[in-house]
Length: 264
Image (cartoon, rainbow, N blue to C red; front, top):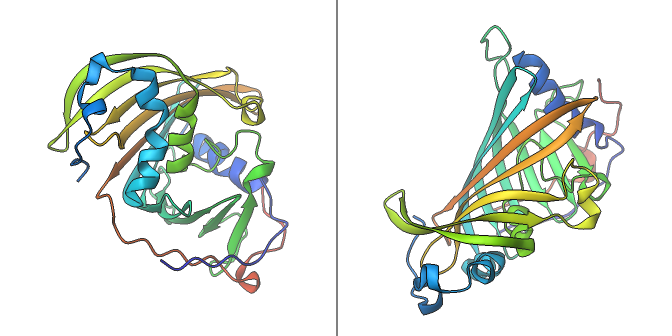
């Protein structure tokens, strides 16, 4: 894996807000392992198993990832989808993100390349006046939601980390996901204080699916926040599979980061 950290930029969180706000406006194998504790499924402590899901991912090292973020406000629904790889030990990843077509059904958006790194989000092919060969860098520490929603995808490790605050967890049962047996848990997670202010509720309902090694294979989380005075309901789904997959992330050099004004 190649990880290089360079550069900064003044193009801030307005880019990320525009990603979600613009999308809404325009639209008017997992498996393996052998853990006796996890295998006990419904008889073990469900909350304890879910809270350690992030640790099991770090042990796995890496995986492929598919994300989906569905947003609803008023009578409008949009979906943003991403696919790529993620390194849980270094908290870096690369996703290709596809925005929805416009209200007429035209697909005029080029896929956005997103690089995820601790404290930073890099986007290429963002549009909004940014040259095609330049990256936009956003300091995720400045985002009220910790980049759980406004980046258009939920960082896979952040999604798993959120489960550390799991409460009221129940064991739903054993299911099959992509041909692999997983155990389905349902509950809510308490948001950390530093990101709770970005949402309408302090807890996030979730459905989590763990394999026999306790690794998170799928998590669906439901957020609620206000965008430009309008309530927005968000359902974020993250799928993790092909654990141990090769991950190569090279962060942009300073000269490749856009430092100009982002169009609204």
